[in-house]
Amino acid sequence: MHFKLQLYSLQLLKRGSFCSSEDNDPTTLGEIIDSLGFGKYQIRLTFILGCAWVIDAMEMMLLSVIGPILLCEWHLSSWEEAFIATIVFVGFGFGAPIWGWIADIYGRKLGLLLSTFWTFFYGLLCAMSPSYFWIVLTRGLAGFGISGSAQAVTLYSEFLPVKTRARSVVFLQLFSSLGANFEVILALIVMPTLGWRYLVAFSSLPCLAFCFMYKIIPESPRYLLISGQRSKAILILRSIARVNRKLWHNKDIKLPSKETRGQIWDLLKAPYTKTTLLMWSIWLCAATLYYGIILMTPVLYTVDRCGKILDSSNRSCICKPLSSDDYRNIVITTIAEFPGMIFAFLVVEKLGRKRTLCLQFLLSAVFLFMLIICSTRVTKTVLIFCIRALISAAFQVAYVYTPEVYPTTFRAIGLGLCSSFARIGAMVTPFLAQVMLPVSDILALCIYAFISCVGAISAILLPIETQGLNMRVCH
Image (cartoon, rainbow, N blue to C red):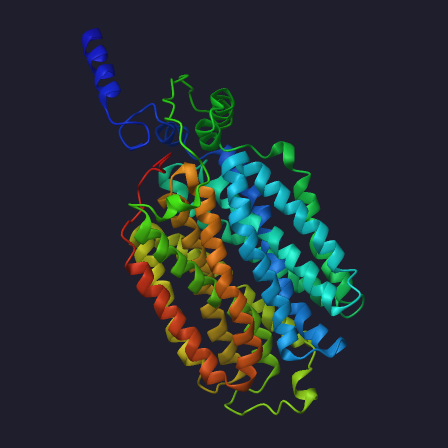
């Protein structure tokens, strides 16, 4: 028996390098994370990192609320209103790869917390903006900070065992939905009495609260191991074992060979070239549609959608602040993210990541075409509800797939760059939703439906299905 154990140990040593796979070697980090399971440690982490999603959703939902108010109060044109949202996504596009690089080089925890404090600082400055120029500048800088919230997914996914990873990441959508709904309810309470400046200031306070969680947020053991901090990684793994009440066998984790981290060009090297290009397309389409449906919702409720061309010379047609009924309808459509999360939660492990993404994009295209038909307010609300549910779910599945398909050495920057390409679409969508839609609803909605079809095609062409696979440490 002793001889057989020695022979088995020799066979383990002769297997492939640590970087090539985590599937067979019981001393690799992936196997250890799986053995520690999903327990109280991950549940606690879910609620801590879910706060980052609440912050992200509140800042994004804020765009659809303050736009119509500033349009009237500061007598802006529809282009100027749209540019307020666009500049946020410009900042987002520049910030995402930078925060991803910081997370790969200096740690997921540091990148996440620095970006959150940045968002708080410039969000608070935005509330004091004396002119349109300062609104644009501070919102752009706040957008730069908001982009770092994506690293919450990178950090979270690296603590999850294979069997629960997809559904756990999808579950984070719950916090995004809570944040979006809270922002609309906060606007309903604050706007009629205190005005938009107080709304912007109050919306930035959760960022400061999250920064005070610094000590209870753990660093990723995958990052610690790949950066040579083995003793710290072991301490965190022991902590997971203790909280989850699992036995810790003090396994001798194989160290990966030293590799550079946070290199953008690794994303375009084989075998990741096709995957990266298709993922950029998927993220771009998902963001265009997701932020498009958020921004077009108040427009659809304030502008006649029955095929009539808006008389742009009549400012009273354009300048129409949101009413209490409009806020209630926005809350209803925002709640759509909850059934969207449930749909993705139930389907992602049965159909796989690729098929789920494809189905969500295709159904969104169908409902967007249906929205072209002149309909009642109730029918319109139902269609918007369905589109938002599907697109928010598609966004979450993209967040599941991206960290799974890239190795630890450039996982954060891979997610960050995908997020940047998403913001290219998000930069364009305000002009579709807030400028083109009031003039030609048919053209704008047809463009959105076409983008949804492109997303479906890109998803089904992905060369790798990550369902059931361990996360790679290096390439």
